[in-house]
Length: 204
Image (cartoon, rainbow, N blue to C red; front, side, top):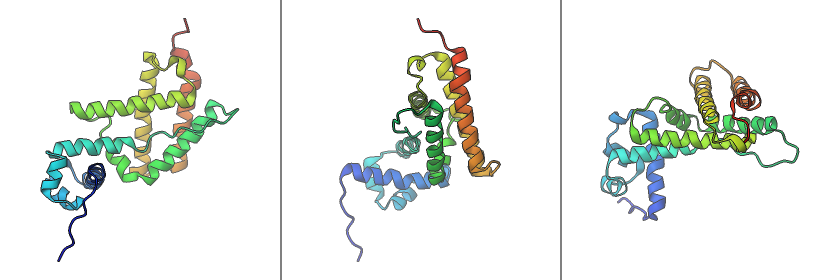
């Protein structure tokens, strides 16, 4: 006789479903996955799954949002005397480490960047890129110019660059982990120290 399903608080159950579904969607295309299969992977009945997520699409969007939430660019603790280069080096090092540890989740999430034509997914991706850009500004001390269009374009471009480099490391092995870290660190330092100062509008 099977044991009764344990009743969990709604927010805990919802997170459990999204977490389990993220593994299913990371391994198989959206159209190949059925709600019955997802419910089985989540350890819940299809009726309970539909209670939290009436449609497969709603669950899929929740999974994408969860995937994009981690790993984020780590914010180094403030250390007196630390330069922008120091903070960038530490942050990039920690980000590469987190991406390595969350390889499948990150690869699944990053596959959407720059490719989706779905309005809701685009909204989630846009929020992710904007958040990353804000974090870079915080790390590199670009507070005064963070809203200038040229700065946003530059940082969005860096996000795309970082995605390509990390994917080539994780999927094809064309670069090593150390090379990946060096490329990301060097490009961001150059962007912050040389490129952005050359294109921003002078303070009024």
